[in-house]
Amino acid sequence: MKIALLQLAVLEKNKEANVAHGLQLVRENAPDHDVLVLPEVWTTGYSLGHLDTEAETEASPVLAELQKLAREHECAIVAGSVPMRREGKVYNTSVAIDKTGTIVNMYDKVHLFGLFNEERFFAPGNNFKAYELDGVCCGSTICYDLRFPELFRHLALQGAQILFCPAEWPTARGDIWRLLAQARAAENHTFVVAVNCAGTFKGAPFYGHSMVVAPSGKIVAEAGSEEEVISCELDLAEIAKVRNRLNALADVRKELIH
Image (cartoon, rainbow, N blue to C red; front, top):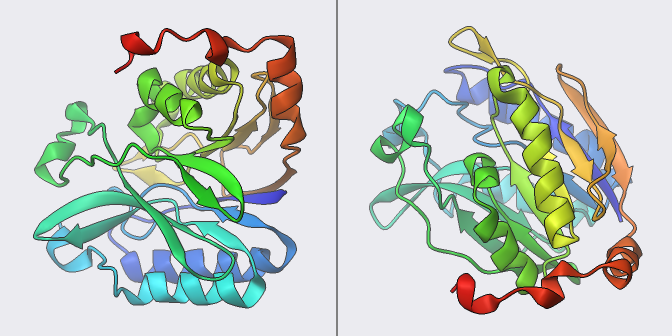
């Protein structure tokens, strides 16, 4: 499986430019990959004060275009996350689209970042399920979720082989980004695909360093701090090899996590 991590520079208060740029990167990279992954809230950036007009719906032109591109190029897209309005609430939603252009999963961010009062803008999600993306069992998480190992373990126990984590993670906590991504992969013997953005918010830089972490915990591909697209081949057979040597999932006391 050939995957591309689209670490785009997200602009403040410029949804139109972000959408145009993000879609262009998708167009450029979809023909050569099986899966593309975008970062968190790549349409609006972290400027959340205008979600009343900037949140997407399931009939959004942005999602429709991503579905069209997925279908045309037979390339699955994990559309990072976008603010999405449903049933009178706005969620921070990661949309997974398969290579036929079908939306196969919508994951609403479960853990809202209290330090930045995300609960003022988003409702918390309740979808804890793994899903199939073109024949591969996957799980979606978003940014702050990296600090909550129980969500990753829950998805791994459902059979997820790839755990996606789009983010807008700051340079100020960059060392923790790498540590947590490696830990979530190693403890669950899964691939972790963590896609951060570049750029700044209120003068503070985002860390970038999008990465693919193997089931062993080894980083097999990593971006720098600026806008970049990194491409990586995922050998899913590596999961079985790691679990044959040591399979912590087989020894989990499930009563502790339910």
